[in-house]
Length: 443
Ligand SMILES: [Zn+2]
Image 1 (tube, rainbow, N blue to C red):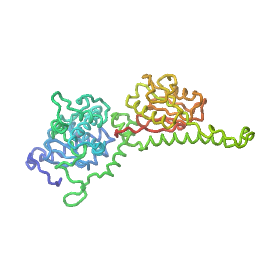
Image 2: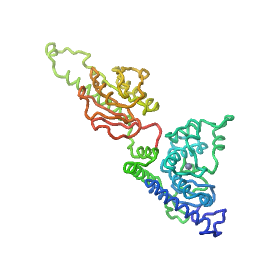
Image 3: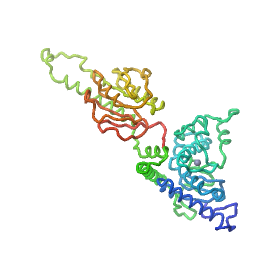
Image 4: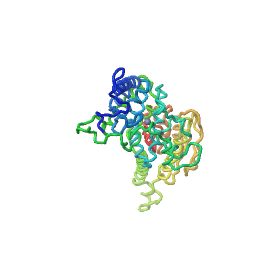
């Protein structure tokens, strides 16, 4: 489709007040984009990267994977500028949050795309509502409209709730039928909301009918826009403080370098094991008085380095979710396996540390607490353990005070912090920080 020759059933060539339907719609759209950029200046780059394409092929508006926003001029003219602002901020939210790539990553049947579209709508709109942005009814989906969904959930989480439907009372229907009933073309946001190029979208070449660059956004430029926008979001949050929570989380995720934190944790555990073994080997490599007294005598037990002793400090305060604790448990289990035989001591820690629980199986971990957080108490309790531990793993969401210096009782222990809820500032440099990546992209 050539965006320069749109067709419109409203007969765009009939001139009314202030120009044709198309001209007036384009003006209102431009006014809406300018206002959207004023209200959320950190999304300005993204908003102006979008290429607006008028079309009569859809009843409302949608965006494709190359950031081309299709809109029906009559739809736009039926909205006031405040709602047009909402349409802009809503549609640009889909490609910014990588909804197309994320639905593809789920490898779900394509007929469920409308469900993911709606799930993405819920997460975008939750942030827009928090910022006081109004949406036209066709796009006004919020988490509370999905049974079981809650504020702060990811598109993937809400999608799973929708896909487990039917949510409405009535006989159980197949996902395909459910999806068909559940969606109407009005709220189809296009391939930018989950993939699957629509008949009304231009092709992926980025070229117009004349073979010229159509100014649309390819995957590489999209990632640059996301990175720049994420920095703008955090800068705005730092200097002015008024950024919806979801956009802030998205920005932190986008800028967090992806490291395989499980591999990192394994690598730290191995280094500590090697150090423990090395210290032993070195100690017994020197001829001891006993060895000198009885040459040729080898004590077999001494050849076997002991496994490293590990303490896990678990933040069990109210800000830590059951989901985060489940991940700590899974990883504690892995660490227990790696440190065969030595056992791992777990310290459940809220405002005051509980007693140190020694466990051999992760099922034995008892998590207590639920109040405020001060992991300093747990780290001090880990340092006081005897025999002294070699590795202290502190699992927390990071909303806690930190000790400035390593504990005096056990200055030689290696400290690793597992941040369970994304990057946090304030972790002291003497601790090794690993940001736990969730199973699903959260940005
Ligand atoms: Zn949408």
